[in-house]
Image 1 (cartoon, rainbow, N blue to C red):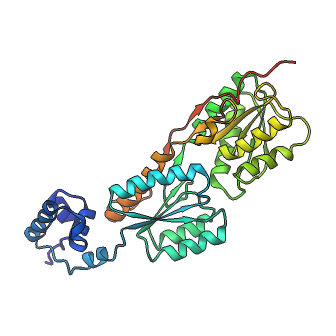
Image 2 (image 1 turned 90 degrees about the vertical axis):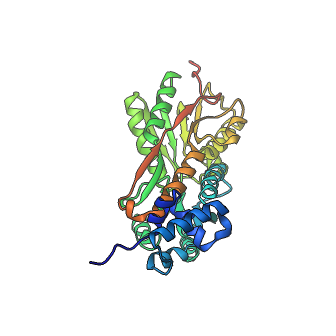
Image 3 (image 1 turned 45 degrees about the horizontal axis):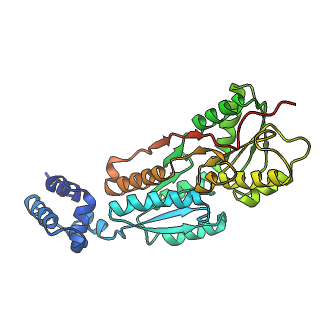
Amino acid sequence: MTAKRVTIYDVAQQAGVAPSTVSRAFSRPGRVSAATHAKVMTAAKQLDYRTSTPETQERSERHQRLGIEVPDLTNPYFAELVSGMQEAAHENGYLLLLLDSTEDEARERQSLESAINVVDGIVLAGTRLSDATLNHLTKRIPVVVANRRVAGLDSVTPDYEHGMGQAMAHLAETGARTVTYIAGPVNSWSDGERWRAARVAARAHGLLIRRHGPFAPTTFGGEEAFEQFTGALPDAVICYNDLCAVGFLISALRAGVRVPADLSVVGHDDIDLSRFIGGGLTTLVTPKRAQGRAAVERLVRRLENPSAHRTPVEGSLPMRLVPRASTGPREQR
């Protein structure tokens, strides 16, 4: 009977360290302490671990780099998300290779194709590619998706349903009766989820809701959304993100609209800028740093022990409403 082959996971368990530490002890000894290196070597000797096995050959090809795709690094939301990813990557001994697609699908495809051969796995933080394309990608390299759910892939998403429920309840309390959702990019999964959650929550609180857009997820997109309104404004708007909400809010104020007496404005993401517009922008807080950390940690677990993570894991993180001066009681006329 053929004896079971010893793997780095066996050595890691024997030495009481992570599999990634065993890999570094053999391939990059200078990146572990002398004491840890000695423990790993002792465990390997005790188990008769042979570095020439296919398992070790496969591990020695690791780059210790992760690819991180974002649609727009100038958006403060993604900057904070990447910051959380950076923390988790550093703690696990990985470097990040940043891929900014600038909301360009062709550029995203090209960047991912170039990165496949120089990274161990990829986190997609705001991909605009189709589900079929993403499923094909994950057959070539481990992938975790943030801000989107794709059948067959690991994902980490905000709880849009809970967030929109809070937002609609708050607007109903201020006396709003009509709400408009200012939509984001047409091929954005999170935009579709926010609109779906907004409709459900609006009905639950007796509010009339309609959609306006799509618009670019930028301050210019928000300005354009305001300029394209025809007829009377609604009682409140909920924008795809804070940048769009800031552009919309500033355009409304320039046009003489009183906020919130005539119009309440709500954003998404709680970027730093949202606290400094007027008395502050009411917004839905997304746990950006925690989401970034969770995505990288999940990818690292899949890389370090693929046999233990054969089925995809979907997780959602809580959202909460932060009321500020851009929402409040409507002035009755």
